[in-house]
Length: 218
Ligand code: URA
Image (tube, rainbow, N blue to C red; front, side):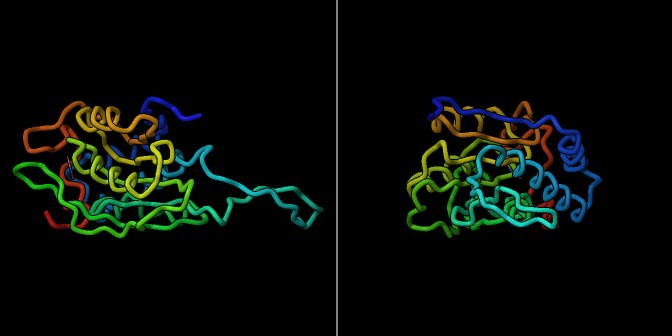
């Protein structure tokens, strides 16, 4: 049944807390930061896909006899949509978490003055196949401009709110409020929720610029 509210999950796992702490630490090097983002993404993608992946049942022969088993349905790949740049690091392990995936990149830059998003790369299909499940991967849900633009683009291509999940490292109230107003039924998975966003659009205490810290461009 379609849900009428957005739900936000912060999975209470000690490894998730650990990787968020490594990300927050300004002493973490680029290599350590990027690895922490990838590990956090692995755990959050796993949590986000619980009860969500279609399976097929088959009989297989084990060394000890015949067993009725379930496999992930290879005809229904999960669509992963990383938002460049830092989404690349958070989505790094998606293809090892999921047996079948398709990855569609979106590049969205935020104007430093106006904080308005501009799309500079769009590898989405013209239309997603009916019933597609899409996970949008964006580490920092701050003012919400970028993630709302990305979900609008996915919805324009035929995907319902209930079939979209968002995976983020840190989420803040302005983005969560916008998502909840615009996309009832959406599910958001985040490593942590922080209290505020500053006047420059950065989450506080947050972890700084996730793209620059992942790719050493500070
Ligand atoms: N993007 C980032 O990389 N960090 C923030 O705090 C907000 C947006």
